[in-house]
Image 1: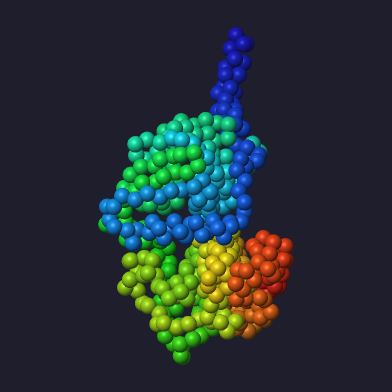
Image 2: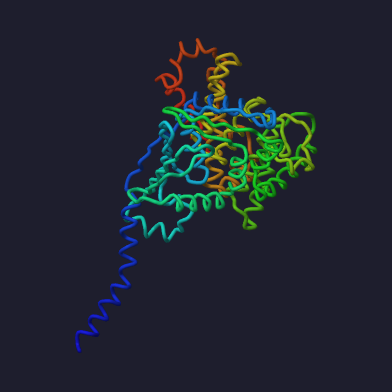
Length: 438
């Protein structure tokens, strides 16, 4: 008779412990201590050049609706899209793709803390088993879109139906469901070869407008309007046809500080201010990228200056905005791409442009990492005075500029050479020395 209570107690304990033990086994199998994919942190100018070429070639705004076309994607091009696209939602993610005839494998490595489906508590509990989620998905070629043939997280195999369900949830959480639906309607077939994929597609009559509308969510669009209105009022009150960029930036970041103090996301408010400024300095307005904003107030044409030049605001703001939308490596790569292109037939490679790029990148990083502190610094100026150009841009008058490619290579050895890297390090030191950007 004594054994019965003991047996019952053991069974009860097992019933309580088995789920926890099962979860521990699953976590130890799925999570790993090292990333399976380690991508280079920096993009090359050639990577950006290929991406720009692809976008121009397959731009829906210039396509004939219904005409069947094909885009050839090399492994490297898809890896760039995979890694830097994923980093907008999963910081620190690296991606790799392996093509084979008839199939492809996608590899993603992301840190446990970046996975949006895990809460902070769940991530902390799972961390002892490993801090890296290594996902591998195998795609099989069909007569149309590829199908998921299998997947694994770490050493844990997953059924295809589970991956598809997870993908749908991720698409919904990241706000990409509309873009995925558009891809389903446009893409006719994907073929995999040994070193590339061939995507056969046909843009539809409404594809261009749907692509443009997808660039901003409804929430993002609503967030932009107050900044567009404020900028329109600022430039309307400005005398003449030119003004320092800081005089436009300060009131927009004052607005960002007010909205953040009211409980809104400070980083998102900074991003909105930078998007509006960046579009304006490039001769555009929000309606240029979002049809729903066509009726908004439009700032009158006016040139902004930084360091006395009208090109520096473009370099600074584009770099800053890119950081808030994606990654710092992408921002630096695009800045470098433009200078390399200029050296091959434009105005020439300019290290002072690179300084404006690097300063803008640093500004964008602070806009995300220390959003309210940056708002305070910009709105409050430096040492009790109004914001000035030299708060945002270091001294650049002594830096070489307008270098044709041959001279650039003769003097600095090309991108990545020791002389080039030494001067770039000096530029970074100058940017780091600005109190506002520390």
